[in-house]
Length: 91
Image 1 (cartoon, rainbow, N blue to C red):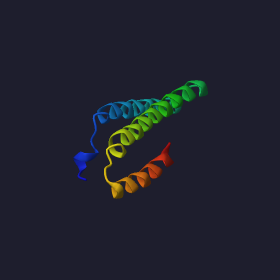
Image 2 (image 1 turned 180 degrees about the vertical axis):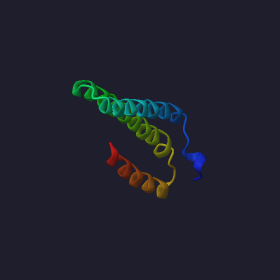
Image 3 (image 1 turned 45 degrees about the vertical axis):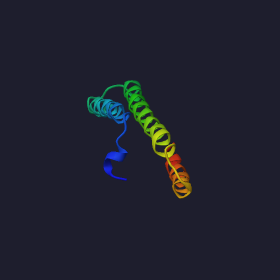
Image 4 (image 1 turned 120 degrees about the vertical axis):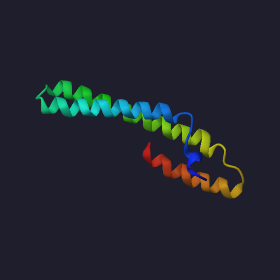
C-alpha cells in the first residue's frame, strides 16, 4: 500500500474541520491571555473539542468504509480485523 492509498475523498473535509478546530484553539488561547470570562473560554474549548471529535469520527468511519470494507482474501481479512481492533481504541 502506498501513500496515495491513504488519501480518500473525505480527507479534504476532515482537513477543513481540523483547521476550524485550529482556529477555535487559537481563539481560546487568545481569550485566556486577554482574561476573558471562564464561560466564554469553556464555550470556545467546547467548539475545539467538538470539531476534533467530528474529524476523528469522520476519519474512522471513512477508514472502515473504504479500507476495511474493501479487504479481500482470508489473510487480508484477518489483517483487517486486527486493524479494526486497533483503530477502535480511538473512538
